[in-house]
Length: 119
Image (cartoon, rainbow, N blue to C red; front, side, top):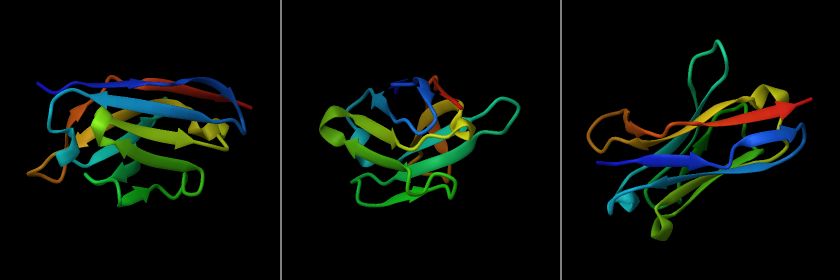
């Protein structure tokens, strides 16, 4: 069984920074692409950033480009989301997920971590 555990969320003022971590159980972490998603109250869950298995290819939602950075440490089975210049509209529950190896979807999800940005 694969388990994903996020941490690092919290309350921060606008303009501040947070770094989220997602640690994945199992010995095959380095074989999979990973993604960060977020869901604000009353809204659908949206993709924020993705990273390939080796960490040399990333994608970002337009709303976070230039402010967020996704990176990974395969030796620690962990993927990170560094968030700078935070805005109140970044307030959401943030989830990490593992990309399926056989389908265009994400097959395992963490429980989420709350990020609240005050104005």
